[in-house]
Length: 172
Image 1 (cartoon, one colour):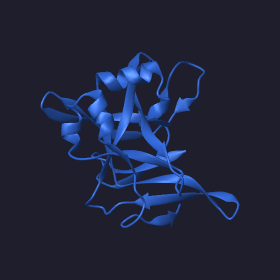
Image 2: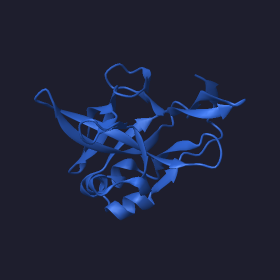
Image 3: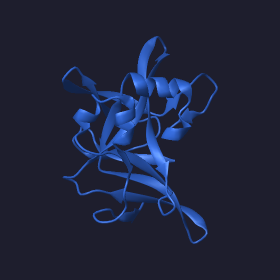
């Protein structure tokens, strides 16, 4: 399970966004961008588990269609993930410098809950051979430009979160 650290527009405070919590998601709207609130975790159909993070190569045809149609990202300042430590799993946090956010692609879908349309998102991630083993994908370059390019070009502009300075591992 992965979580993201985001400074939410509503509170202007760093917040660890966990499953089923709201986050600020950005999308293109013509030449402009706009932010909206969405819940972390997407549900495909009733009685299926929520999807919080997924590798790009594991996207099913429906998710790929969402990616091809419109792209979204979140602005993050860190993430939390499980990693093995002394034979047990521990939760660690990896942070950026507060003035250097990273922009991470997400898949957004909507569903009706009690007659109200709700937006939900899952984070695109990649596996790593070193800790942390699951890391968010990040957008290379200006994320606003990234929203306007083709789906294939958008994928080519992604890189796996690099751990090292200024990242810090903190106990969670």
